[in-house]
Image (tube, rainbow, N blue to C red; front, side, top):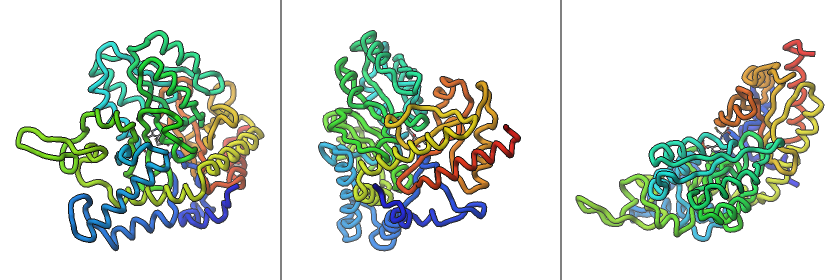
Length: 416
Ligand code: C6P
């Protein structure tokens, strides 16, 4: 069990009020809050050893380089990378997936090839593949869902059987940002590899909330964002197997990604630097390392257990709210994401945006909209949904406040 009171004390923002009410922050799938140690790490860098890295021999440059490379090692250990050299720092999940599409994808995906995705994907794990498929003349296929919101693995098997070796890549989320579904990524990796395809995990929602071990999954690429896991914005990670990264052409050209430059051609640096052109986000990389320390200190099994217990409590508590339709699977197949609509006979009673505004008046922050998963909204035939998403500092009392606010919102709209 987590000592949530102690954890909450580490997050200065949780002390603030919104519209005169204590903040209930339930928008963690969009971005998490930051503990004092992460905020402090950024200030320390700028106050004490701000310098460019991998370039200078002066003390500040050496200290900054050591801290940044240490953060890379921490991140590598956190996901059980084979080597820290497999950890490429990028801006976020979106950049990581685009990097794969624009480098590995352009080199390996040809006309008639197939990329297998699912209908629950975030736009970041969809649009880069659309762009690649359009330029290469490749085909996209989509795994559908079962009625509870799990991936239909039989459908995946059928797609892989049908297209066989033409499938070059399977790319799926580790956990859905809308349904909360935890996907069986190790099983998917094995199915993808059986036809010779590589497997990319969009881990934007899984690395922050579940233990993730790239060796146990057996994936080839994994992408995630620092800002969703207590770290700063503007720093994220592309992990890929060493052999895959080494064979991949570079992404952007410039300083740092080269070993030797002539006027007409250049020799690339070793991985991961080959993919980190220009001055990187030094402060935020170091901050991500501190966030990883913080999560490691809690233990990712404990993080997962806390969020699943909150999700279970929320499913039970919200079941008592009339007219509430919840999307996604039951526990334990889901993490701490609860997406819902107030509806009757398939019609929305309150638009999720109105609902989010009403809850905001009560100090409760949830997200409303399509959650950057428009095809999934189409799949369920709704324009938008409301979503509450949990993290280590959320409590059952906050879930109670959400449930009570949902009842009051219906009163306000005169819904009986
Ligand atoms: N989802 C949400 O509110 P970036 O923006 O690059 O850090 O992460 C993109 C991304 C990719 N995949 C999944 C599964 C995600 O959930 C996200 C981000 C946020 O659901 C913001 S749209």
